[in-house]
Length: 189
Image (cartoon, rainbow, N blue to C red; front, side, top):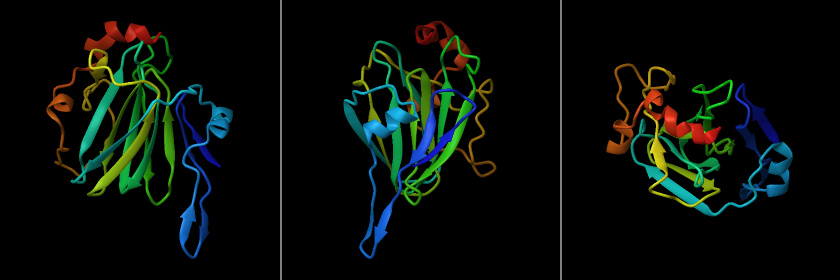
């Protein structure tokens, strides 16, 4: 299994081998035992979600939920390609407010594990991109939060063409900056 660790402790990217023949390929997209060996701590995955973005440069994020409804995620691309980003929101972390980004695609089959305490979002790099992700907790509107994708203090280097503006939901466009979330983020200590 391919594994990539980052400078921020917790998240990791991975890809299981694809067994190919004349028909195509077979792969395990989720194997709890193998992922536990890599550092996955959650064992209860309660929901699978899927999104389809028609246009390239659609940005979804940066989303997270507060405890006790915080969600870990495992994200993969069914069709297309994305730039996937996670931001450390753990108040006591040495990497608080830092981000990592990784390209995920249907061609490579790579995935990313995101533990609780991180905001998550992605930018589609191709039209008609389909993203699937597992979550470790149910959706709670009361605990649902967003971090602004363009927060200058976080400074995510989105791979957008010059002068391009991503396609955003109103929620994502109006999301607060990290500084204004600081009090609530103490719950991720």
